[in-house]
Image (spheres, rainbow, N blue to C red):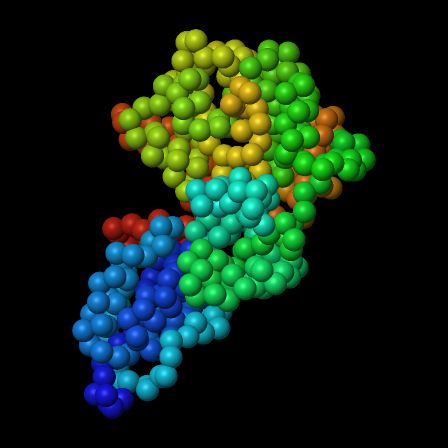
Length: 409
């Protein structure tokens, strides 16, 4: 078929289409249909696609584009126009643009996906017990972004050069989870995890998760570096431990959030309202405030004077492995800060502000660029309402049905 006899269209897709594996998905879809052209990030929240080839296959491409998109992707609008064929000989992912638009959207952080969890428990995988495993469908985004677009060189992962195996995955179009995965790494090339005493003394351990789980079970209070900041973690079932945390943190009555191993554990300590499970297990993994069970094995000092608990599920590999190592199946997992101060995001803050609060510190090498606290949701008349819209949702913009004047807040 001559070049002038083929069809060609240019597509502009607007939405959460960066940092979610959208370009690799478009590449695989186009090549599977023998279509040529390119896909490119325009910067912000827009992707441009040029496809040319058999017209029936182009129609099929358009149909499947929305139906088969990656789970974290959200398409807000699609603009399509016919263009002249450019006689491309293949389909390529082009280098991203850096322009910002009024509709620019930065991808929020995404909880670890089931496939990555499976890998960290697979003893034959190079991701075995690697706490920071991620792929194109999950992992940190906004919290580690230095600049747009969401490419590795614009993130805190830029200092970690991919090993041969990770580079092979990154370059393989048939690897649906790691092809062009900007944040991927493994235990060979990714951030390392370290344990410190609160006084700054580094402790050499073979398995940081097992070590810190044992300390928590023994009643110690620890700081754990996560996605958007440090948490303070300890047993939630022992009155003496919870009261000690309240004393050290100078927080006499404000409720502490809990992290539970899975939804079965949530059911043992709380009464989830209809719709809560879907939100708890969503990629956003917010804290959900719900009624406390009367017979819950939770210290009364976790939320004194309240009949509710704020509970979330693990959203990093470290948290998954940690909660699976705790017999209770749940822990206090509260923001790592002292009263009146923001959550710590680096060791300097931890050793200066939390030195009298925690006994041990879990640190990893990935820098936190943007502080992001856990989101909090409460059901009101059966409807989920944000008490705090943060990790998992921010800085995703909210589309309204009315025209609003631009403003700098």
